[in-house]
Length: 617
Image (cartoon, rainbow, N blue to C red):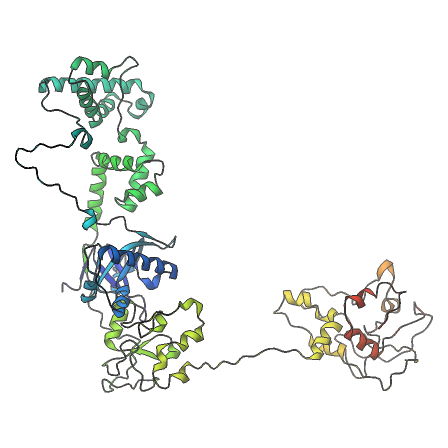
């Protein structure tokens, strides 16, 4: 019954996944929701597996320094490996989790020099922390609440003086005398001087403009003048004047006016006081963080002094009463029954004999990945599904509680022999799997083999030629910006296909008309349809725009029986010399086109501009 009763301040395990390790949290509040469920407001604690590799390196260096300073006994490699599972990192991150996800209690303590690290391994559910992790800034800092216990924090007590021996030390260098109880004044005289000091303080606040705004009434000014700062100033004045009342009175009221002494309660404004209360609610009594995040213009001594003065005010009493009332309305403890549902990662077939390796979908002969045992009353699936790794019952409980395996593995960055390996960040997935301890068992080579084949896409010569010939159809620039749009492959084939001539003789027959290919098919359907051949330079018209019957780009007629993208094949007609704008038509032969592709370069491109210059092949 007591084991299942959870209270505020307990460190508990939370389960957010059936296969991942437990989350370790500290209960701050227990609230009951509107539907009757109980939610726990918790403080997050992180494991080493939850932080980056750089921060793990920083934690390792901090652990080595701690071992050297505290003179810890030597540990074996396996003990060092398991000790990393016991280290946590405190944070100031809060979250709300259902109380039904609690799976048990644990013990978390702040590490100090008197602790023996090996003692944590001997206790179950025992963890420690020494660094604070910031999930937002991704930093590790030393905990400010360190308990200064150890040899370097102990005071050095000098030897006792012998009877009749005088102290040869100079007392003025060791301490400062601020009050002499054996003075010549009597107690009534001292009380009268203190009353006069309060009256001078009230008068000084009446003359000060800033104090008049903060304490507009006489009662407030008198109350402020009656604070300890005024009494300390009056007693210090008596000490400095050798308890002469006449000299002390003249020091209280010099020629320039009365001396005004104000403490931190008067120096701070109302807005600064509200900031301090907000910071105190968030950080508690962590004055360094309060000053750094909320009041950077204040000194640390000023913040501490204000806190202890603020505790004497009515404001502190009111807040204390409000917190007590809120605490009474919240739950003090909650009972969570033991979780008995089966874990989905159990792989043993119900009704099978205990200790056998037979399981649904798992090969026989597979041992535990942590302790390498072959006998266990219950097996649990662990790791990637394709690896078919599993853990025995005891190693599974260790994995859930401590977030690691009992023995170091190569997947976790350490060899089974104890030697450290290189960082996994420089290894590929195949290399990690090759170094994996899973290959120890028989038959794992087949499981590790990936059914993957390397393949490349190699274009044919016809495809490469089509990129040059059919640039107006393919529009590679536009296609690169729209990779999801389809390309009209039929139009490309129609452009590239032609019947080779029987001989290489010059074409003497008159140029025949062929079927028009029509406008190009746009890649984007919303693209406006534009004509293939527009007006040439200097306002000249193209041959097809003049006759109304377009030709192909290469000057050859279409083969019979071939259809264009938008029009049907028409009959070949002779070109009328009167209708043609140019009397001479040049048609490129097969050899010319071949040399054009073979010698395609910048020089060949530039030769097209000065048409009068002969081209030397």
